[in-house]
Image (cartoon, rainbow, N blue to C red):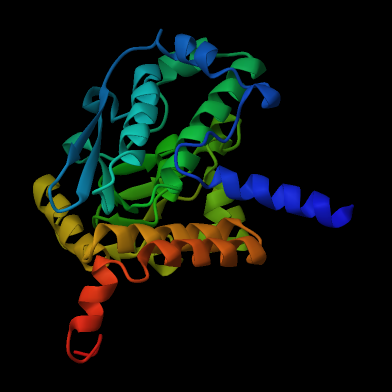
Length: 299
């Protein structure tokens, strides 16, 4: 009996990792269409996506008059872009950044003030947790390019990426304590995974201002870029990402899926996923081409 329950639980966890699967549904009290109608009432800004031929996408938070704060419509558009990326089979990497040299200042306060009941807050939390979890599970190597401020929900968004790069003058700050709430887009859980529970507790309870030096020292970010100019830092971030996406899409995507499995599944299920992924690549074009090259992978 216990074994069958464990098997059922493992199967459920494995299914959640499949591309395009939502984290919540009506059994959790989540009614997505109702939340969408609610968010449509708060326009402003946009989420823009550029998919390049080299397999790198650029996702831009575009609401500069409000420091790229998320309006309700932008939250809806983010989900739409994530779904588009889930279906981008040629994709290998994605860079998330904000327009006009600012990452994101969180949620638009006009929407926050209007969605004032606990029920509204929980519904919004479930919507954004669902969106950002699906983003995290994309078979793409993701990078947050942090220019200027990443505050509140913007700080949470950075944790949904595999890597984080900062410009010298930029700053990450989880300001939730000062707003009388806790992170609700999955940011606290992911922050613990990134920097550990003790450091995460300091960052959250202290509402610490993480400049590029502090963030680098605690392992919050992977590198501080040389340029702070918007276009140049974006170019620098793309050059940084290329080292990790240089290869056939099916291989890069398979590697990302393997890491997601190892991170989220029990060992037995993660091993099964590895075997399944290997079965799609062994004897395939990329594998045969590599075997045909002299010296194997030794340069």
